[in-house]
Image 1: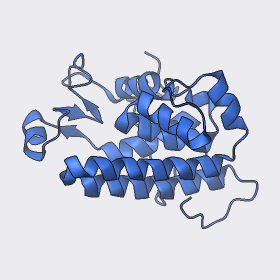
Image 2 (image 1 turned 90 degrees about the vertical axis):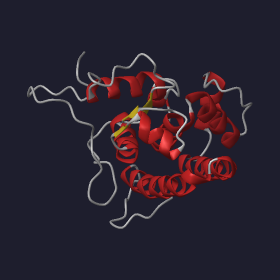
Image 3 (image 1 turned 180 degrees about the horizontal axis):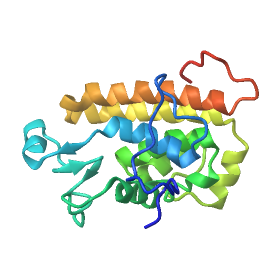
Image 4 (image 1 turned 135 degrees about the vertical axis):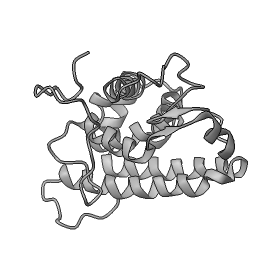
Length: 207
């Protein structure tokens, strides 16, 4: 498999990283920026025993890929490059990330990775006033093009906050982590918005 980053120096693939301010570096592609944030939030290996202890229904998990939803993964041989490829095909491509405004793609990808691409797609459709059928097609993209990306990103973050509030009733042990992830994404999204502004600020704040 060719590297997601198209590296040619022969070094093992690693996930793109956020910089010291919590921003994805400007030179990264929209997918790489989104992946940098998500992998920063997901962390490493959660064993089956640890998953049971904390009540994580996904079971054993590596870089956010839970055994329950990825039964084909052999965690002893699963590489970061394979993880990045799976993240792109299963989530980024599923939300048609390359066709979204970069800021919207950045926010929606992490939602899709965390809660599933169909649900994230429906939330985008709700945010723009389209029929929430969970499939991002030509009509959804046309409607999205008439909207302000920063406004849609804010709506998505608010919808995600409401979704977490509901989930936290059933799984309160994860509420703190979910809320932290949401705050972190609002901050990083503000940095991404600044990168695509005609006159970015040196001190961008969360959107």
